[in-house]
Image 1 (cartoon, one colour):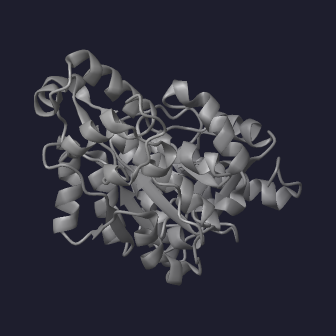
Image 2 (tube, helix red, strand yellow):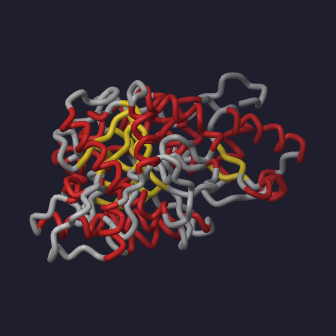
Image 3 (cartoon, rainbow, N blue to C red):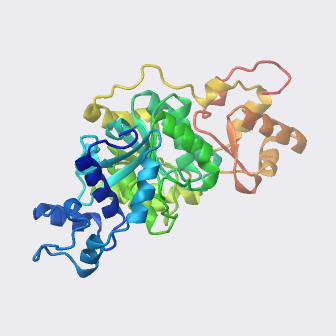
Amino acid sequence: MDGLPGSGSTRHRLRGWLALMRAPALGPITFQRLRAGGIDLVALVGTRDLPAGTGLGAELRGYLVAPDRDGVERDLAWLAGPRHHLVTLDDDNYPPLLRELADPPLALFVRGDPAALALPQLAIVGSRNPTEGGRRAARAFAAELGAAGLAITSGLALGVDAAAHEGALDADGITLAVAGTGLDRIYPARHAMLADRIAERGALVSELPLGAAPLPAHFPRRNRIVSGLSAGTLVVEASLKSGSLITARLAAEQGREVFAIPGSIHNPLARGCHRLIRQGAKLVETAGDVLEELGPLLGITGTDTPPATVGQRAALAPAGQRLLGLMGFDPVSPDELADRSGLAAGEVSGTLLLLELGGWVSCTAGGRYCRLSGAADPSSAAAPDAAGSP
């Protein structure tokens, strides 16, 4: 709906759904159990003489008699805005993959296009504090997979989530952000402009009523929606205690594909991905690895032209080739490179800066450098001049 429905009966049902979304002691599993028993909770909202023998707890019975009417009015005021929607379990627009869950949300607040909920989706998740290489990987994978026809779904968090949304948008793809708050607030606040862009090209989604704060308990609930909307979940970087591993576990429990990008054994943010791979997640090196699994399932063939590699974005001259040939994918300090190469410290520093600007290397924590994927063969790069500058 864009705005509010007109008929009295439809509007009454809408008020009932909104009230249930604010009900205490009513989770998705309880709702499904009562619904399977033939109990229409939506119709019981505001009823003073509730039928006996329905299995309703005392707290829920009390709420049904006296629901949060002020909260419902705030929700209705928000829904009157343009491109503001509520998609309930009774709606045809309710995403079919999410409906398969044992604990599907009763309803979803949506800002943007509700039809995006039913598109083939891939969740991309990872650390809130990724390495620069991790950030670039998330953005690049989202861009290529978005261009191939997958909607990219994530949680609007800092780090990998934001990079995934941005990558999809860069490729003119569609992206969905599932919030851990009510949609009348953006968390983190610095992502307000990003949220606006997502709403224009896809949708912001939340099962939480308006006014809901970013409480710790809200984010695992959000994560099950991120994975539940998606045919698969790709983890870019994650520590062993990352919330991204929760999302991956939920995806596996939901019967969805789990993908993980491997990294350096010295990178603590690669350990979560390595654990997932040991547990059976598919090791991913290219977007094609994801499309190989999901393409036949979703009817997506992907793009014919592979994305430009890092090595195609910049050419190397002798000094750059020399340093890159001495570097691995594990971080190394400029001093170590000076010792290995025999180059002066100043020349090493300047060359590393140019390599970083050209997309060949990434500067990690502590001022150490590592080579980026795609820069594995420095001898294949042509030198633009003989001055030694990349």
